[in-house]
Image (tube, rainbow, N blue to C red; front, side):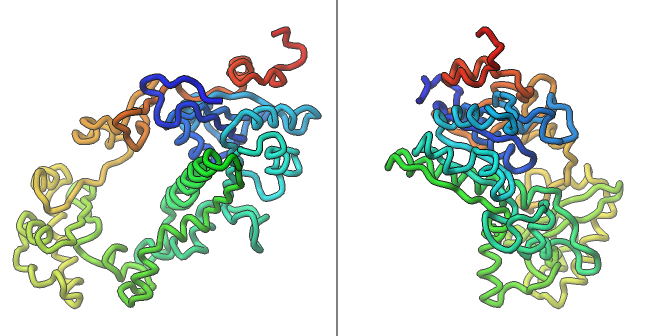
Length: 380
């Protein structure tokens, strides 16, 4: 099943992945597998998944190939099962029971390929009272307590985009799960189902904080702790020009350097004195408002004060450090994050731009030896 490895393919070269198209965490997880070198075939549905973006700009479909299959057609399930028979991993993000109803659930796939790792990406999980309910990132992280940790106590918790739930608690846990199950499948010859629920992964992300809560070292309310904005030397401050600086001077030596560069050395005793934190926050805020973001960036440049400018998405790729590392890349005119993490022996790259729905059907049918993918009227 494996194909020959070539330089730049990444550590997952030779691994075959079927992605049943959806939106959000499933496609991102499949993109990560593709970035790592896997041959990811996205099974798009006619008309697309409903994401309001031109497919040419959907970078979560980079490094993939696409075929279009209507699972409601009589021969639709058989075409997908043909791919599953030759795959190592399948990823789907339907509500529980939908894949089974469409004829491409775990039992049907494992009947064709017992070694298959079947990855299921949902918000609520495959079981439990909410399993079949609709939802989105913000609701999932709300129930886990994670959303309730974010923001000021005098305002509603702000949505952290969909990074914490969909992508951190969802996509990344799915990828860890399917790769662990792939390791088991290659050792035993037996595949399995991976149930990746955003509520589970997001809760797991907060493991250390739950430990601190149990130890009495974390208050179960917002902006009252060391890492949630309660601490005046771990937070953000507005500058004279309306920009922001991020401060993370937690350790004493970093804190002292921060005070020195900010010009408020008289606040040294406030480091461990919570009763002085309000005064310290006011002093820090007042100092930052005296100069622009660019000026403060120059002040803290090269220091260990743990202070950085808060950049916009458009500014980030131009930062000297990120530019030097190649953290972002330009592929076909689209500036986007480069694959991560990095590997010394099997480097990763953006090999192809976003897959266009159905554009690779003939190629996939040939490479995976699944002629049933081709319409019966196609002479090839």
